[in-house]
Length: 122
Image (tube, rainbow, N blue to C red; front, side, top):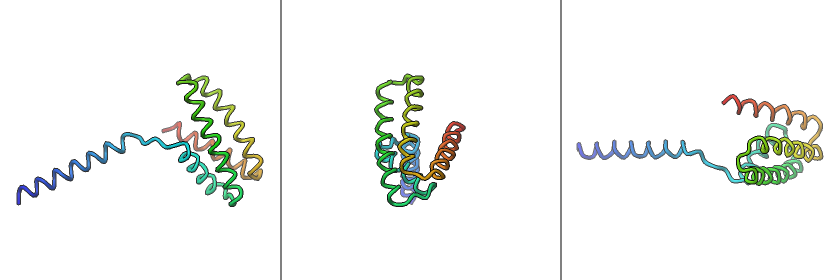
């Protein structure tokens, strides 16, 4: 009986430690997953219709791929990355102007800024 108790406790401790280790690793999302999450967020927050959702999904995927290339090409030069990201975000907003209503676009800008500020606080 005592052996079973020790075995069960050991198994529980090992499982807990393994789960904690996996959480701390920080999972990396694929470009497609990031774009999909952005589209889901925008669909919910901006109340996109199906046509808008498909167009926004394409835009998000295109610009997420561009971001990945940008990060790889500047190899950690934060200033160059910041400049390029500012230009890329401007281009993305121009692309979104063709899809979103003016109210949705303003709401997108406001909520995106809020999300960015929340990330910086963490």
